[in-house]
Length: 172
Image (cartoon, rainbow, N blue to C red; front, top):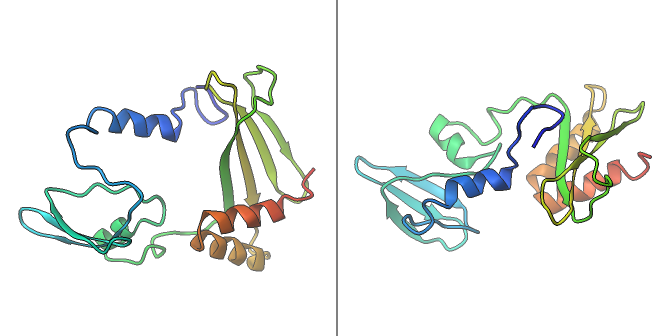
């Protein structure tokens, strides 16, 4: 897939499938759970899970927590947010289950003078979908909005989506 930023793009879901398909039957994989704590030992790792509170021993731990990874923070001996530096750019990525570009292969881009931007991009799925991006840039003078966005991110996807919807309500 060609995109605004690259000649070749692999969507996150497709990349996950590339990694998981060859190992799913041969390796213990755990979904819909998160790691509360882990302890590295000489020959294994002891993992305590957040939801189930189960403690299990594994040969190794692979985690995909994203930008605020608790695993990365523990490895770096920092908090999950200490290694982040906000530049005031917030983006929401989503998929629309309708093909809105009438078969076009070019991204549609809309931005206004008060800095929000909306992207609609083609999706390679044969069922006909559209990828969307909402981008909001806050300046150092807009600390209240930036703080609301950071708080919404900490509170989870639903909170972030609701706030982005409010921010883009009258964008065009």
